[in-house]
Image 1: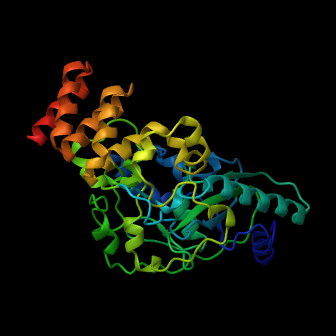
Image 2 (image 1 turned 45 degrees about the vertical axis):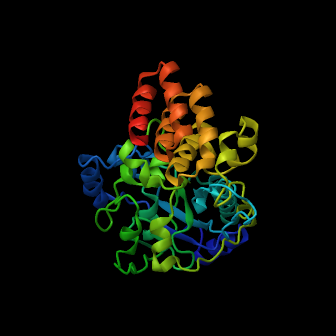
Image 3 (image 1 turned 90 degrees about the horizontal axis):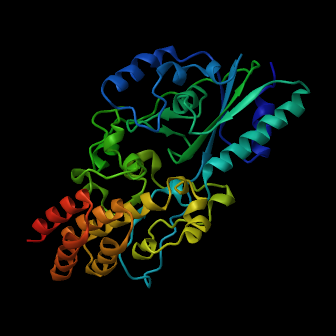
Length: 374
């Protein structure tokens, strides 16, 4: 064995990780049928690896892989809400995107663990570190490693931190004694399914990513009209199904200090986000796990949220976007939101746009918005 269990846990604690486990690198053949069914039903999102074999076979990612170390890094911190003196329509941001990008935290801690094992074992071995951008089924591997169980909403639920954890894996080409999986403890209460605003969890353990706000708020392009009202005031991610889970009540805050600072507050004022410069974005939201999607996708979501909230103070900034923004994606959604808010000033902005905007999709949306106003 490369290293003993107790020594591995000691190394992990030194690296600031208290949730660590090991499973074998045997391919997850039992998951192949489920993955193929998802593909056949069109439930594979563009963020996922479409090839089932690549998702279940660790050896495709590390030649000779024999063991997999999994770690769960908690990211939940106290919600950083704006004081009541901050007036204006506000959005909602998922917990995972409020602090510094957890991918860097997980990768850094996994690297520290792997290098400490190398020193302790006084032996050479190959390893590869993967975060949740990995094609492998990380939640399944984590469950097999004893870090928790899969809930009806398809998240891994850890006994201490609930489902508010970021997962990482270390593929190793040496044998390490595996941990035992814990007994599944999902209550089967269905509260996560009932809480989903879009019905994305059609049945237990079955997720439609194309209806999930966590996916939709990250997807690029035009949001289908029928899905826009479901956004509510969510501008990045969605924690509804997790917040409803009994295992997530009074979540234990992350002990990792780097994740505590709110680069992206839980309920930010929306209108200032429409005027965010690239530099401002890079120094705030760009430092979080939401940063990878870029300013345009975020501002599209902000525009949709303003339409759903219906606050009249949003008409002026939305009208400016409709008239002046060079991005047709933003103008299109601004037209929709103005139609949702309504009123004479919104109608004036929409009619003016219809005279001058030559983009066919924007014009179509503007016509529909004017009909909504009338």
